[in-house]
Image (tube, rainbow over all chains, first blue to last red; front, side, top):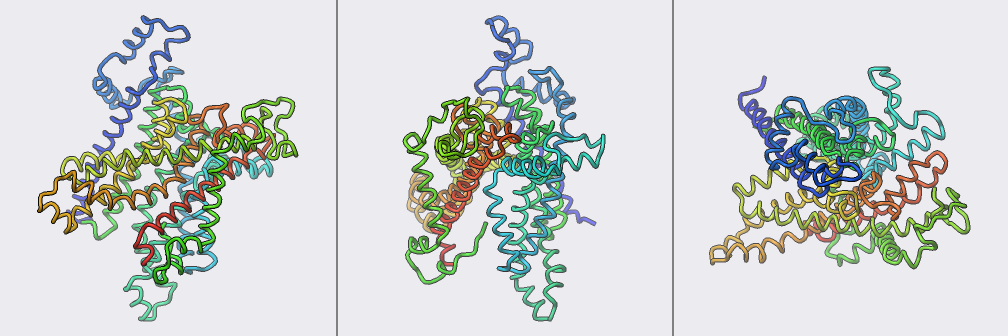
Length: 317
Length: 289
């Protein structure tokens, strides 16, 4: 069971996350609304008059002080109302909920690939430092840092979808319709999205494992005659667990960003592609809603990582 | 990131430049970047065609004697567009990283130097921005400012600034603890003197190293924004924008994705390697250890 101190750490972490979330929402709201480009002008159609613009401003409440607008946005947010799309008049919340499953599927799928691939590569590389696997893993990590998500995605589509017809080139199948087809269709996007994550996890895990294997206690274990394999699996794994959890939070944040590009290449009707369309068309409430929603996921994962960290690492007290 | 110091570097005090030039990878990197810079500056003299000239009689043609890298969907010469695209890519990534440093460094300096509530406030915002996916932030900012290369640079600059702030804060706090700073304060040095004379000189190296390591990321971020239609606007040539066209015509002309894609990967590799070189060269610890 967790000690009282641990609970205090957990409680503090949760409380710390709240103002951070408030700051993000506030900053993004302010910059979206004071930035150049007037949504009222956009809505007023092709031949706007002074009156029609003022009317639209009043209708949407753009004429109120910015802090009042923010307060009313937060108030509506708490009631589950994120406003309406300036383009399609669809409620933003509906739009997000319709598109979220496709995004979550490829992000989670990519996380699984990155986690498994990165763990295997990282541990194998650390186990035989300087060996063939290590050199391949390190080289791959270096290359992956320089690969744009969208180009990898295009290469995958070109070869595996268009040339060899192994996977569908574009689109997504709703998970609720046919889970197997959905996963099949999400495979290429997930691979494209996972590349940089594999590299990140490989690099971090390799470094952490090498540090453990070089530490004095491992030397003692070796002197006592414990086999390399036993040291790696029993003592190494136990000590890199914390690193692994920490890097997962980092990788998740990267995947959420990368999904904007991946969804665009594969024409997946997710939140990422919707954000891009909304950003180009200055559809403020949609941009704000999707950014809030995606950052909420990033925060939730970071919080979970922090909590796990507080629970697992004996040094956190 | 921590690459083991090369064996040469561990020997006793060879000239740093000699160490660098003995490394084949470093030489290739520098040669490539020199070539790239030359092409970026001299594109208008080097390019065989006008990058926006349409030739609707020769669209989506493969490589030929007239068009070494073929033509795109509007019959524009791919090689010329690639050369013209180098400038925006290279200079905008440098500009974005410089902007990030110019925003992040003063804030980090203030946070580390003054501590207290200033530190707490800046730290909160920095943490919030750092946990935010960079590209998401950049898309959000680009949405506000409108779609142009300048705005993409501003967006990337803002998105990358918290890293500089955090680095600068740590450096400032470390320097503040030093005995000689304590001594300077004791003989009556004011905060401005302390910052200019002691803190800033110590911060130059980590800031440059961080800037070098970020260049590659900035390049890919700019290409991503241009790819999404939020950066360089057509018909102006950019590598990200060329890939966006290649995506549309992927079935009919898959070869269109190779020139800009390879240019991006090679340049990102070169930038990352340059950052790594800057780190090894400037960071005294990595040379001795």
